[in-house]
Image: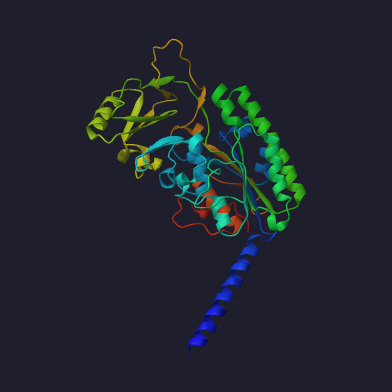
Length: 410
């Protein structure tokens, strides 16, 4: 009897190993779909038409297009993580480009913490999901892709370097897809910052911003030409993290408003996150800020439901947001030498500012031609890509694959 049980167990184990091996081989089969996910930072929902980016418009015409609604706050890192994980910021934990974590007693700064994967373990980014399910992934830059997350990295990746030439970024993606089938990544990210940088410096609709958008469009054309030459079943998906708005209403100074010994303030464009362990100090700050006509101020539990901010202490005890298209500053407004840091800005509530809305374009063998969607939240990109790649997404996503069902082609 004991011998029979041992034989049965060994046969079962062998069968499971065969199934796992078969699954791993299927995951890397050369005819399995590929996805190249491109982010154009700050590419507003209407820029393709406004700036006549012909290569991006060609993708729209041959595939799918939609306006995409970013998560609040509409800034770079929270939204790149939402796209990559299918979670709202309060669930993946990156609730700003900078914030304070009361549990870790630590500050998050996107430029310093981008390589620390321990900040990003509340979700499973697509490259982590792929690698965990025996599919090779690659990152040609993506915010947070520098860090080792849950003990996993993409098989191929580059540490972020803003000076790395854009042409070489595109060429690297093509070179990865030219690898032998057993080494070739099926999921690849690519990132460009040019449009966001130009809009901050010159304005949301400035000629310099148009030039930046058209330069990136030429890169998209080069990328698509290279992908077509490979004769692989590649789906090209282009997204942006947020839109852009001209700063028309100046700055709101909070200089001298807080007792720095009791209150911690994190400013990010039009949003201020305010922290304290002193309840009296918080109530005092709340009362004082509510007297400033240019601000809306909320206790975290009272923030708009659409922000999805209420359940994460990283969002602060108080959240203040400017009214209109202004930004915060800690500088003294009477300083005659002070000049606005930015002509274009983002971070505003996407429910109130359509200029914060982002873009979505897709074309490829798993995308219906001519598909048009209504505006949808960016957390729905994750399950759509997982579906194309045949990956099993984790439970409890905020996004749903059904939102993009009308775009998907089996």
